[in-house]
Length: 160
Image (tube, rainbow, N blue to C red; front, side, top):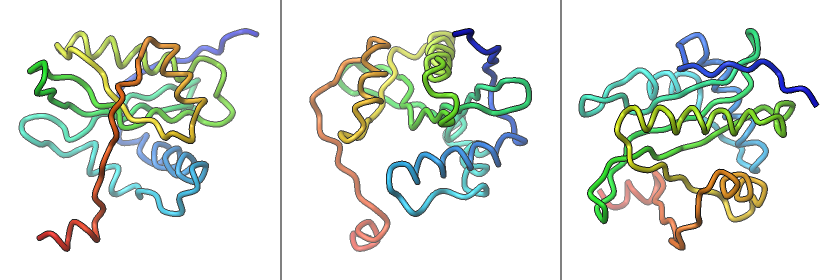
């Protein structure tokens, strides 16, 4: 199978509608009815926080067609006292899966992380997504044996 000519580059404002659609596609596939809108994605990728962008995105494209996106942001590890990237999501269109698009996005992310002095990349994977688990393991990532806890808007409001 021939590999398509895919380029990886930083996301631009013109990409926000396609990124929003990719995220909605992912959420639908995971059984979620809600998804971030374009305004929320634009705010996330345009706004600064502590001298850095709140989040960054790189995209994979073939010609003018967006095939995938990696959304990430800076994090800090208190054990190693180092900074790294927290990968929020890699999303690849259904049609582009199995064509190494996700691998290309992750490799570009790793290269950028190294250029910027990041010491690690971390992410979460749903237990019900063995395909993603296998993909990340194939990149050399290891399961860390931690449980992730989160609080949503309703419970958060109760605390304040």
